Length: 474
Ligand code: HEM
Image (cartoon, rainbow, N blue to C red; front, top):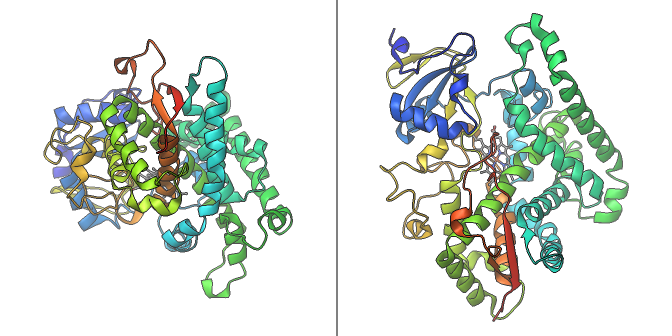
């Protein structure tokens, strides 16, 4: 059987190759792939895991076996993150999953819906800019931009998902729950290895952590559902566009053809928070980091903004279409810093073949999209930061170009691209139009650590501290 010959690094008893993942798994897997090839078989504990590090093999999988790999692996922790298999991102493939994904793409994340929520984004902008001015006026003018970006993204996404009446305390809790999801993803549950080992999950505190995580979400959901139709309508008037409101209203729509249960609504809402906040915030943070490291790029972005703004001090959403350099700049950032570098894991639903190897049912699949952005066969001088590479070419992140898939690919592709880009573009445009940005005195570009922290989402490990000064807008 050819499957047995799949290249595979030597493993240890019991843990297999787990120790080789290191603290930044996409970097460790990239190094391992240089030695063992672009298709490797790892044993993560008892889990057989295929790792793909080359776009050509992903193309083969998606073209021949997308359906075979359309499901996610299930485990005790995936049950929690998928709201008991009622969400989109972590739940298994099947008819009810398809219905939920369709609801999300049609009613929540379509480009029309994203446009219709312009008010929510625009209303948060002056608060973001004020926060920058306020933070800079205290102390020595140095601000922690990472924290400000985090709170901006949390504020925008929570109000778009749960309504603008959500209190500040709830927003903080949601931001914490979103951050808590990423490490939960990598926890090992002994009960998954054997039901007899559940006591170890109790002993390690994992069960307590899961219970408190679930309780916090439940309390939030219940309150939001109760208040829908009361406070929410008072604040939002007739314009009940936020996601949970939209979903609750859809429950009365008989043309849906299936029962949109409260559990589905909770699962979908949880996804929008978990999958939306950290990815969008990490991207904004990397964008500002690369701008400071590349002053000539910053100048080009600012020149374009000044030209388009015609002396106005705010950039409105109507102007974003004219900002072609800003758009290629963001593409270049996510080429080098995809926020979910290993995408989300998949699992085979039946036996299949990849590159002529027999792959049995229930094999986990990990795609190292981070490695694709650095592949010299596809990118000229991949380590160079050069937004211009995207001019005069049609390469895009929508899932057709297999060497640039920061949002994933195939049936499981991210449905939130337009939603996050709208938030990122308007924030960047205004932060750059209104302020000049520099490093605190005594700090140089060489001092900036470009490593990622550990977790499913690749945040930059070091917080971004910068000095903003008011910019001339004309
Ligand atoms: C820069 C921002 C974002 C990036 C880079 C990103 C990236 C990804 C990636 C890599 C996946 C897995 C795809 C795969 O398995 O092939 C994914 C899935 C998903 N994302 Fe995003 N995402 C972003 C923003 C958002 C936002 C704002 C939302 C919603 C508000 C969202 C909702 C989802 C959902 C629901 C899934 C699961 C799709 C499925 O399993 O079928 N994402 N995202």
